[in-house]
Length: 314
Image 1 (cartoon, rainbow, N blue to C red):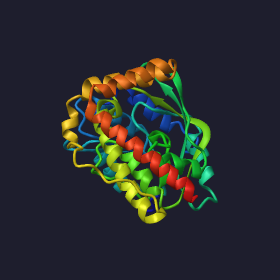
Image 2: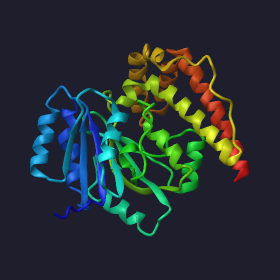
Image 3: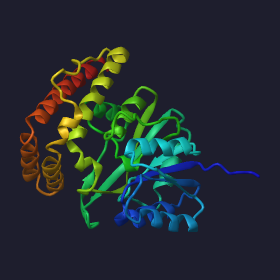
Image 4: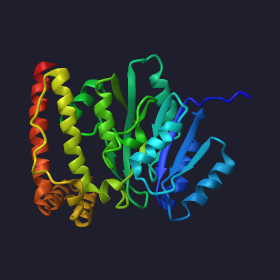
């Protein structure tokens, strides 16, 4: 019996994601590029996510369902899916986000004859909880600009937009920001790019991990950048000071998470239409937690220093 290997493995992890599940999966199944498998890891959902997924899988053999016996979190769940992925390329999508119908076609076509290209993203339009467009997300296109973004600890990719070659796993020490940690590893392995086309509709939701655990995300970004800058020191003579002893254990940063996350959520929504109000709320959110403000300040200083050194060497 001959088993065909799909060209692309689309990977998604979901936890209690019933609200947006239908539209997200439909946007994948409706792709003009059809040679893919869709691997969905159900991270022990307590709602009727399982029933919805099983309904889709009965109608489309490309869907492969995996279910965790216990809630493991996004990073570990993604790695479970990656270990089962058979495609040459991995495409990521988060529940709640949507793809344009020709997204995979454009990206796989772009990979052709670019053998040193490892990672490719796209531009995006932002949606609110109700699906209304509230802004855009623009990312650098060329490899050099992407590298400079990473040097400044800016994330140059939207996770739901990326396609990358199937040779990586996520770093499981990071419950959040696992995407940024992966990009900083790809940095040393080959070329990266973003299409100039909008191919993803990205939902800004209060239910997203990036907002619920915003405090932990800042701490993780600091540690990711510490490891990244150490690697840069070895590879490109760029350095920064090491992690300070006063930085608290990440669990201590859980305390201000609810109010902090909510204010950050409002700030990001307002930035698209009212920059001044968005910046003001963002400042308030950091004042709610002086420790997080200091971590962010140290990170900003370190990235500016490394950016200046890097541009001097290149």
